[in-house]
Image 1: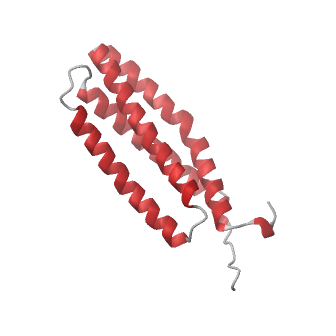
Image 2 (image 1 turned 180 degrees about the vertical axis):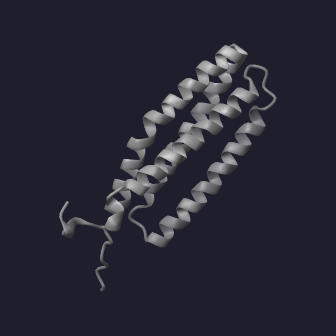
Amino acid sequence: MSDDDVTHARVVQRLAGEMFKAAVWVALGTVVVGVIASTLIWGTRGLFGALVGGGIACASALATLFLMRKTADLDPMIVMGAALAGFMGKLIVLFVALLLLRGQDWLHPTALGLTMAATVIVTAYMEARASKRSRSQMVVPTSDGV
């Protein structure tokens, strides 16, 4: 990528790609560990709880990266606003999912909650680590009008 090709959108899209690569396998590994541990501790109910919790957590992580890619062409202030709105939306969705699934007999709520929390925390850590190590943020694109 030459200096003429550097735009805010490309920097954000590259960062989203780097964050995805850093988090995807670790997140799936966390779900697998949660499924195995929950199945050993709580049986079939633990298995289903961990699968649902891990699935919701992985979907929320992918939603964040999808939001980054879709807003990359917008003004940087709007991108930051969308990131904040996405974070708040993710918290609301996770809270509603826990409330709706809490009383279900076919899954164990502790397995769901622990697997979901572990996956969200590990994914957020890996995304933040990738963002910190990313070389794409060291480029400050110039405006056309300056």
